[in-house]
Amino acid sequence: MKREEILYNLRKIFKDDVIEVVDRSPKRVYIEIKHESLVKISSYIFKDLKARFNTASGVDMRNHMEILYHFLIEDINLLISLRVKLQKPKLEIDSLVPVFEGANWIEREMHEILGINFKGHPDLKRLLLPDDWPDGVYPLRRDYKEWDKNAIRDRGV
Amino acid sequence: MAKTIVPIGPYHPLQEEPEFFMLTVEGEKVVDVDVRIGYNHRGIEKLSEMKSFDQSTFVIERICGICSTSHPFAYTRAVEDIIPIEVPERAKYIRTIIAEGERIHSHLLWLGLAGHFLGYNTVYMWVWKLREEILDVMEILTGNRNSYAMFKPGGIRRDIKSEDIPVVIKKMDSIVPTLEMLKKAIIDDPVIHARTKGIGIFSKEDAINYCALGPTARASGVARDVRKDSPYGAYDKVEWDMIVTYNGDVFDKLVVRVLEVFESIRIIKNCFLNLPGGEIDANIKDIPPGEGIGIIEAPRGECFHYVRSDGTNRPARHKVRAPTFMNLPTCKATVIGEYISDATIILAAIDPCYCCTERMTVCNNIKRKKIYNGKDLIRLSREKTEILRNKMGVK
Image 1 (cartoon, rainbow over the protein chains, first blue to last red):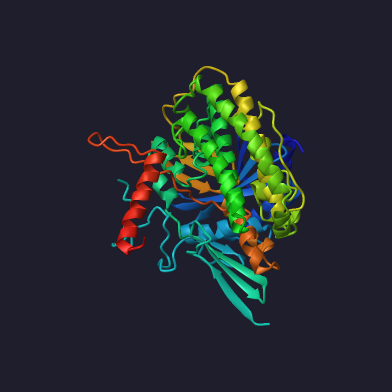
Image 2 (image 1 turned 90 degrees about the vertical axis):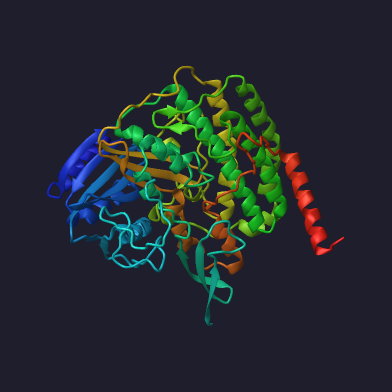
């Protein structure tokens, strides 16, 4: 399938789920979607378009949380980034692990670092942070405050 | 039979870096595995948000001692994707040369370690001796054996001197016969066959499901290489082949890496032959608000960087995804059902990122200008042994 065909199909099949398509460059497309329809669009891209899941990146935008799911279609060199916006304080989205195993670790990472809950994830335990890290403290959030006064950390100096 | 839990790590003589594998075994068979990482978590993503775009390059370079080119490469490409800007041709070629040099030394490092894990230390010694030659080449080209500091958003920091090029090509040619000998010795070796063939098979379906990357995926028959799929640098301008094997066992991963070393040498030589002249830096002034993605093929697989800019001189968000992050979970598909004696090499077969120590050089301030070379170090170590002997009363 050609690039234009893929974008046309995505717009047509998911016309109620896609909010905005930003055609950045020949290799990059950013598609903003509704968060309820993440699983069906992702499984279409992963299974039908034979894309590879790169990773997901969560960004704290103060009022809302943004997650970008990056997929690379290797045959035509197109990187599709699905953008999902979650309104605070209800940070919850469906897990992609039932669709493909590759999303397992990155969802665990986002869970502990940004505090996003993934519904349907088989085992949402800690991955990077130590065991004595307190619950409800998320280091990559904008409102993160240092909780351990004794720890030596880089203070931006 | 009762289940037993065998912990490997987090601090274990076998591993160079802290990782914790919890193997559940029934007799000698592994029935379950759980991985715990995070002992080396340094918060680089957060740290990068506190540095300017230019300073971040140096922080990123220190994510890993082995992939010290891959991470800055992906990061600079992500920053260039924000603007967007094309780097000058000469910079593209030089970036490719440095990245391939890194691939050679990284693959050789793994090959040596694999020999070590199998208890075959001859391979380890031979391969690491050969790796030294590559590190010397990198020192000629960049001034450093590792952590080259060659990358900057928009181009490269230093040019390659034209008088160095024949020396480097000669050195590259001189390692090929040794490498050929090693290839034959390793690929035909009955011990390595016995220990790696049919062990830890990773199927093609699993490779797609786990989104495995790099040699781990290519050994399972998934033709996946960012250098071919999404060409960058000079990879679409010089000739080279992607190595793909189909069995998915440890032996095939080994073969992929050995053959890739030859391809890398080919790429480097082709790059030197076609090296264009001209500028090496696009001189980026300001980074506009926006977001960019940089993907490149590190020795272990695709390295992914996502950078968001809000118009200031610091990244608003910087996401780093190293290839091992995707490859490490595949141990669930490979190690279960195998014998515990094979578990070490299976877990090591994905080439988890080890940090390597540098050569010790004491560079002093102006007062005491003393730089130790290899002979001095040997003398120092002998002196120290002598002192220890006297202390302990050993003759």
